[in-house]
Image 1 (cartoon, one colour):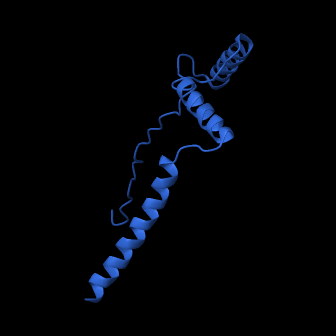
Image 2 (cartoon, rainbow, N blue to C red):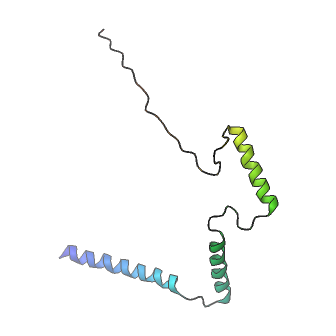
Image 3 (cartoon, rainbow, N blue to C red):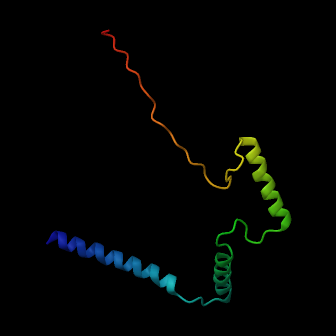
Length: 102
């Protein structure tokens, strides 16, 4: 009986919390400034999919490419994609045991 009472209390609190969160998510914007903010966030999300910069200028793109080329030359990574995190491959070290009985 104690376990079931505790389970009911926990379930009730979880449902209250989830209902409170979902009410905020599904609420309509009542303030025009709030609506403008939501619209701008949606616009930004739709523009920024798969791009490095949102609205790049030719000067900014050139500077970005120059910096990537500089990093390639400096680290000797010609032909590598410098905008991705490198893959590290570590090998297990070979341990030689000295046998003192020999």
